[in-house]
Image 1: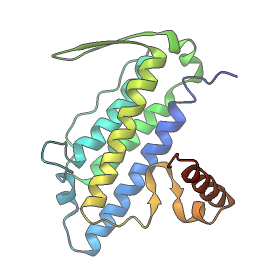
Image 2: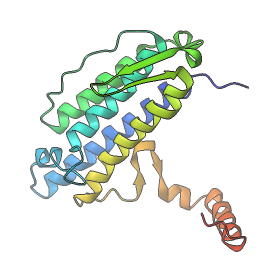
Image 3: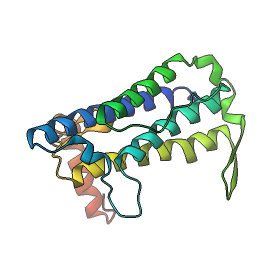
Length: 196
């Protein structure tokens, strides 16, 4: 059974972007409880040479919408990079998700073989559609969403052990039979010399 390019992009990006929006809600509430201006979080970064939270969210959205637009052969929506509040970032995420919802599964037929060319000031990259999605778009979306989450965790925002970007509650996972099976597998892997 083959997996469609639509299936491994649109629903995945919608799930993770919704999770990122939820993380931003929790960050705003956390900042409010501590009388910290939520906008102070927007310029936070993990390291001096990394992008700040606002840019991480912008790139996550741009990677998702640009990636699927190229694969579906439609125009990439333009979003100004002018967000100055958490509400603005949430609105950008909502616009991105709204765009993703407009794309028809049929537009992705044959997308795995589509020739994609990305031109940057110092480089040009060429991919087939499958490599573009799997080796460029997905990693970029995951990286920037995870980095946004990491910035908020690094600033002291406790997210109660919730894997927010994917919407999976870790406590439920730990209480499940899956967790017991995972523990057994981990113990077995350690015994045979393959640490997990």
